[in-house]
Length: 154
Image 1: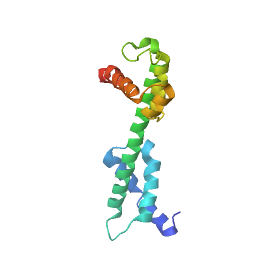
Image 2: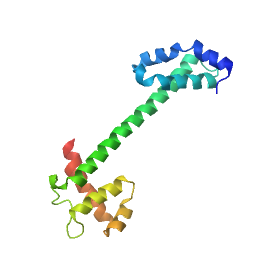
Image 3: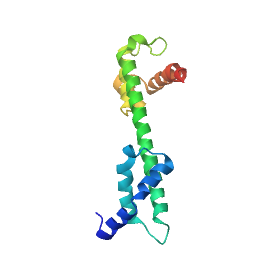
Image 4: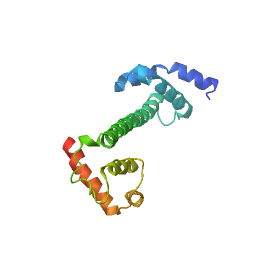
């Protein structure tokens, strides 16, 4: 919560939001709220003996933008992985599973379960235990998968 003096300082320096957005090429429609909140934090925590408010605000916003862009990339990777896993799991007929899974140990439909468990955060050891296979076998399945699908799509 800002006190009256801090609120006044935010109002006086409101132009820093536009300055920063223009400086780094951000769309104000998308970023205005976050930049305004960051201005409030900057005013509240700024030490005028160390730097100017604009320098401190820029430093804080650089961190904010970096974190938000990292979150966005994580979301994109997440959606890509989910789509990729769903394609493998739901449309196994489209994939040539020969050489990828030893059918004496696992069936093709179990292959999709292995991928989903790994994506859900299970270790190879945990997956092996649940599937009744060895950890090295599960590791080899992932190596073959990566070689067959990931490396070919780059």
